[in-house]
Image 1 (cartoon, one colour):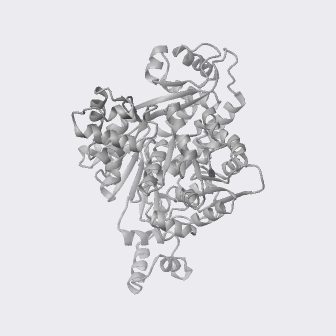
Image 2 (image 1 turned 90 degrees about the vertical axis):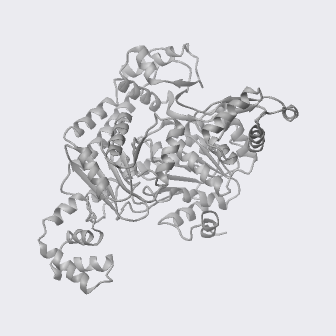
Image 3 (image 1 turned 180 degrees about the vertical axis):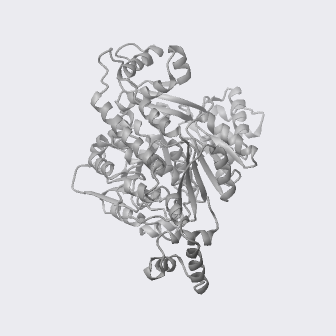
Length: 623
């Protein structure tokens, strides 16, 4: 089948979005591809379609566990078998998943980057039938990028082990980052790298920046002024809960979402918001990655993001359906100082970082030269309380130890419930169960999970509950009851921060903290911070044009809908409105292009600001 036929058969779409077809064609020709598409540009289709058109397995590397689970679930619903391997899974679970991927009918294998360097994963690389290697969030491999992850550097070694075309995808890459990505991901052979990117313009998205003392009042005005669903971003969990409660007290349907909530509560709130039962979700940046909700009408930031890259990605979750939407950033006079302080505190002194390295090992009673490969269930509050440490400094010290390659730090990981059937199959059929639902559950477990008699396997509680026609809490109660019959061993689902140790404990003075890298990363972070400060404090340049220029797109026009462009048009005399109304009366079927041509015609005495007056006339909405 052709790419378009494949798209229609499996996804039901009759056409591609901009640049998708070009990216798919380049991949099918065997080229390595770096695809830069804005948030909402449909990146997953760019590798899922070619993956379905080739025999074998598409290996997808992504750091986003929520995205993995969402895409695996979506593919499974379409009859396409997919598996995810991520932090929080035991060695037995990973071994089973890799075995199924190697010898089963699996089409997509999602892997978190920290798994690439393990001996278990490497032992399967010669039998995994990989047709494409996909690198999602590819900017994470670049030290110039805003979200550098050392585990991504393992992809270079992976390319030597697996000879397959590579598809790298990102929504946020400056020209310098794009060059770095291609250099680090370049494989052997002569297939060459194709850099394909669509324009970053979002003509339906109005960027608004407001300096205000009362952010809550502004938020209420936005919620009341713009119909539809919205997202509100804040940095801290406590503030998310506070703002959600404030919105509820103001009569607005809202709830909070952050990584500190249990996985069931997060899943329920996300689902309520996606189906429209909740109008506004108030969240940290833990929310939104990989969530495909096209009709988000506004995204509000009540704290300054750390970089234009983070802001562009989060703001871009509004208006994916192409209708008028708003990205609003609210700040007060203290926010800029606070952002700069945060940037400075995110790089604690190297002697403090070295001390945290030793304290981590002492806390878990790990002697020198031991600990390689250990997976530590980590509680930041308990660790800091034990050593009387500053939580923020400690958080960033552990993050820098990760950047220096000593460990992997995975915050708030959902760990699936695990089940093992502890009686043999013949004995199982002789057990007299007190409830028929127990028999139904066990039959479903045996059909769904290979190896469940050999070791504990992770189970999808949502799938099991749907199949049995019960709620997740009722399923958990049923699993517990079956465990009391001494038929299964049941380990309930959990949520935890996990630290993976990359090598044995080093002696003091031998911990390489790479001082040159430290200075480099700190300077790059300071540059991104100042770029964010310039964005919010600037009043002369169109917001969209500023962001496009930051990402290397110099040739762009004023958006005519941001607060800067609006301020220019608001100074126009009333005759601008009268001129436009007269034109519309005489040309009732005029579209955007006809109006633009009318505005740009110098004989009419108008300038670019008149186009925003036109927008205000036709949509009647204003923030």
